[in-house]
Length: 364
Image (cartoon, rainbow, N blue to C red; front, side):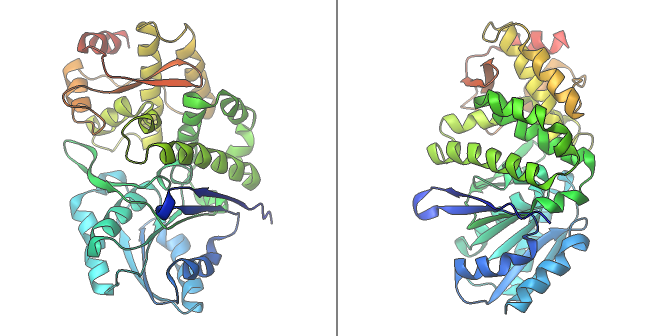
C-alpha cells in the first residue's frame, strides 16, 4: 500500500494549521487530534447518510481506542440540505454532547458537511476547535482549506456563514475510491481552476495525468491534492477574508452559483456548475477583449476530456442577473466577475455592464 506523505502548513499566524495528506491515514487521526487540543476528552463527529456507513465506524473506533468519548451527528446528504434547518441539527448535537470550548467537532464528509460543521463550530460557545476530514476530491482540493464556512439561503448560495479556520485538515486520498466517478470529475474541475487562474503548467500536468486520476491512483491524487492546497493556501494567507485577490478563487463561481440556485441544487454538482460557469467567464473575457481567441475553446476541451458538462442551461437574462445579484462576492450593487487574460492569468472585474452579460447569455 502506498504511503506517500505530504504536509503543508497554512501560515496564518496564531490561526496556522497543517494539511496532512497520506493514503490510508483515516484511522490515524487520534494522535494528531490529541496533539491539537490536549488530553483525549469529548468530541463530536458530523457526517451524512452516505459517508457515515462507510467510515464512521473506523474513525470512531480509532478515537475511542485512544480514549476519546465520541458522539455522532448524521445529516441528510446533498447540497439541497445545506440549510438553516439542517445546520441546527449540528447545534442540537453539540448541546447534547456538552462539548466545552476546547473540545473539537470533526467534519467527516464532503464540502456540504465541512461548510456546515465549520459554521456550527464558529457559533457554538462563540467558537470551538474543528477538524476537516474531507472525503470528496472537491473538498480535499478546495473547500476544506481556507476557513470559509456557510449555509445556503433561498436567495443565494453560502449567504450565511463566517470565516473560521480549522485546526487541522486530515486528508486520506484512498477514501476517494468509494466516490462516484461523477463526483471525482467534479472535484477535478475545481483543481483545474488553480491552473486556469495562476499556474498554466499545473493545468498541463492535470491533462497528462488525467487517466491516473480517474483510475484513483493514490500517489497521483496526493500530488494533485497537495498542489491544489498549496495554491489555495498561498492565496488565503495573502487575503484571508477575501478583500482582494482571494476572489480569484471564484473563477466560474458567479455564473456557477447562479446555475445551482436557478436549478434548485438538484441538477448539477458544485464542480459541474463551476465548470460551466468558467466557460461562460472565458467567453465573456474574449468578448470584452481581455483574453485571446481560443481561450474558451481550450477550457471547453479540457473539461470535455475530464467528462464535465459544458452546455449552458437556458434561462432568461433577467433570471441570470437576479441570481448573480445575490452573490455574496458583490460590492454594493456591482457584480464582481473573475475574468481571464489567458490561461493562468485571472483578474477581478467590477465594471462589466449588464448589457455585456445579456449579450453573453444570448450568445449561448
